Image (cartoon, rainbow, N blue to C red; front, side):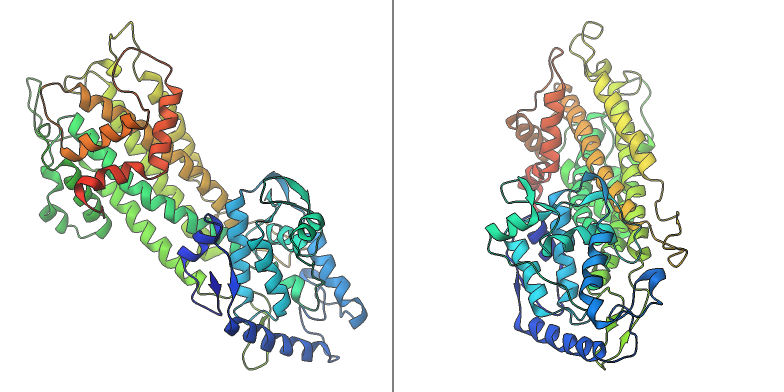
Length: 509
């Protein structure tokens, strides 16, 4: 992965964060780093105070710092800001955080020396992951504490995890991999801390995960419609063209593709034929489609943030070093919260379909709770309880973090974004949504199999066969359900559900 002054993509970030891709600096980046550093060095030699170069930080920015104390100043800002608490943050998040900070450093707007950027790349390539804690960022002035813990590792201080998963003193890990600690100079400590990199990294990973989950939700909604003997007429393209939301049309098209050739849709096994299916079935494309459009908006914001160089102050091409507020996380925080809201609603409608499959009064001929011998067997009764508990938490996680602000730094930083918090809760929401979809898949697959005498769609058969090959059991007497549900969760999380469908339908939208 070659890092230049611009052009980093979401795929690049995922490759480094999740795939362990190696990182190299382009010659263009090295040249830009050296040029910006020359500007900082020239300003540092002058008697006039320049924020971040020869002053304190935040509410202490009024103090001019002499040349003899500036190395200490940069070292101290990293040490003092590495004040995180709570559980460790996941390895992929820390790697995304570090890579995105390196991306900004290489833009040539930060004034960091080339050797500091190279050390950042060396740490990533060595598989060294700084210990970063859950709490410490307000999403303004950058993800300060998380980034500080990463900068601390560059200095050979604090703790980090080696490629073998063992946490050791950072100095030992650097020495073991031949990486020399850096001594930070003017502005460099500040430049390593001032960015929205943590929240952006988590946004990019959530977007990738949710892209798969929305396709998965279209598949499980189609399976539930089929198991409930619903009608696929509501999925006709001409109906969705009347309300031209692109996400809605995509979801309807996916469901229609899954149901092609089904012998279950449109049947009725009760005395009063249904004129319309319930909302949770009939409106599946509208709800999932709105979420897809939310994803598209969030992706646009992420792309803009990826194209940004977030630092304060910035070194401009004309030689000025100017302060700004670009570190404020509001643009990213809003979409992180927006995605959590959409995830909660998608989980909510999936749970309603599952409940309908299990209720003999609304399932149109299916046994109560899809049990083998109702009364003796409880079937999937408590699987739905688990799903309901997950949905309830999804709703709590949908409460926006970005609507909050808490002043800091003696009221100098008196309005913050809470974007890091929005990102952390979105990660939990994505995990919970995966489990919710897995429960619907588990129930719908069993329900389809219980429709004896009716032939499911080819895509449905492919899903059920792949699910059973993955070790997820089918209908029968009660058994220990947790392993089945865990296997179904992995089946969804790893994209195998979508892959199974696409063997029949071709690529979903």
